[in-house]
Image (cartoon, rainbow, N blue to C red; front, side, top):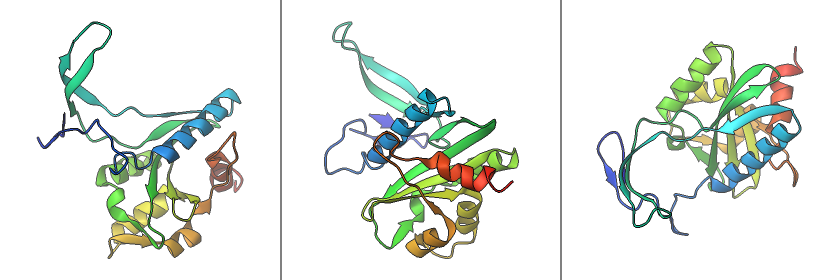
Length: 193
């Protein structure tokens, strides 16, 4: 059981079923992790998935080799999914997946993530979102400043697909580097200098 900071209990939160939304984003996350491994082994960048901070409360010790966490709390809301260094610059980004074909639900972007990325930009870091449209099999890099602006002025609960066509860049990939987002980062932050 996991307890959120507001005291809400979620039983079975560590368990997943094929029909639950708890695995949403896991395919994209897995592919980004593979790309990050490629970047690291190629000496291009050091970018890692951030762990979610939890406080372990109860542990079951049926035997020494089979320790099981039975109750934990999220210490605080996590910031974003990934951070690291590329070409001497700090990088921080959030990855999201949506099955929708026409719009991206803004409820998937949380206020603490917007605040965090604003701070990253303020201090000269590179911040962005990687958004996967699973039904369209397309993945986009959205600069944080564009997502933040839309988030702050939005008079709606979603971002239309067309907005991504106009404000984001499509990320290509291959088997070895499935989400080659650094190619887009080069275009946006290094080639225009």
